[in-house]
Figure 1: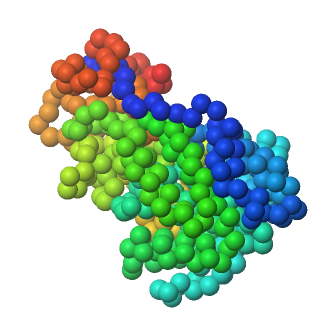
Figure 2: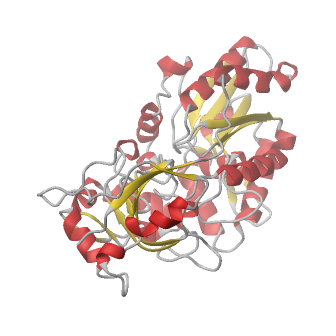
Amino acid sequence: MLPKVFRLRQRFDDSRVADIPAEVSRQLAALNLGTRVQPGQSVAITCGSRGVNNIAIIIKAAVDHFKSLGAKPFVVPAMGSHGGGTAEGQREVLATYNVTEEFVGCPIHASMETVIVCQTREGFPVHFDKHAFAADHVLVVNRAKPHTRFVGDIESGMMKMMLIGLGKHEGAKIYHKAIENWSFDQIVRSVAAEVIERCRIVGGLGIVENGYDETAKIAATLPENIIETDKALLREAKRLLPRLPFDEVDILIVDEIGKNISGTGMDTNVLGRKYNDHEATGDERPKIKRIIVRGLTEATHGNATGIGLAEFCLSRVVREMDAKITAINCITGSHPTAAMTPIHYETDQEVLEAALATIGLVEPQNAKLIWIRNTLDLAEIICSEAYLDAAKSNPNVEILSDATAFPIDNEGMMQPFA
């Protein structure tokens, strides 16, 4: 017997940028880049593979600003080994976000070739995209957010973009190997310092999103201030990070995972599995016993990185998975377990019955179950009846429906998350 479920809505901080192009222009204008960028000079603008809301609009606004200075901007895919580790694959990833030459109004120069800029003080090479290295200037654009595997005052943001993103496949491989010997904080600071000094970084453009996946803040910074700006944006991103409303979960059902959702397919900061693929450690929350994955996003292009964090999935996920692309990404990131295939079945009914049999002395109808679309979209979720009393007493939660029978059809398949 499956538990009854109800729908609820979470209330998050909804601060957002009202006019994104105007804010990008205002931020960049405040840097007075006309004193650094001369007419006719080239400017490489980075664009990564992570799903960033409004990224095409942000990139286009940056392009327009440099055009207004008489410069010649172009876009560089900066995404490590993503896109299958090929130039064409990375160009396709950008097109998924509408970052095309037609929309942003400038060329896109995609290549997996890098220049070895120097050696770090630790003794490994610094790789940098060849097109970006040949440019007169580079603008680093990235969203600041908590890293899925590392903790510090610098995690994912502009600093990471300068090593993993612009380092391409070769750089990403070396840096992830180096992280096995030195801390992430030391590696990112060491490489970024060399890049800022030697690679003509003209500035950075940091982005923060709120709990509704909307652009909450855009901040431009000069290269000498990138570190401090990244720290400040990370603090804001952690404050705004959407989370599940309950700390104890027997089964989490995730409709879709993908690289556009998180570097690990589903955000480990949301799952409470940042340090261990299959359980929360220390004071991590929530504590989830079992995760079920039902599908891949279209934008992930078969990259199922993170599937290994789930204990169960639908068989269709395994069929949709591009094993080669997934392996490249997980091996490059030194996280091979993220590519491991969970136990899988053809129908939701079979998956649920198997998962419910592994959660201990809990009757299926009393299981604490949460169903989400993905780890970015947590404003509206579906919960089992076991959470009803807790939801009623939570001031940040609005109950949207009565508890009803679990939505599964005669073929044993759940209805799409709506």
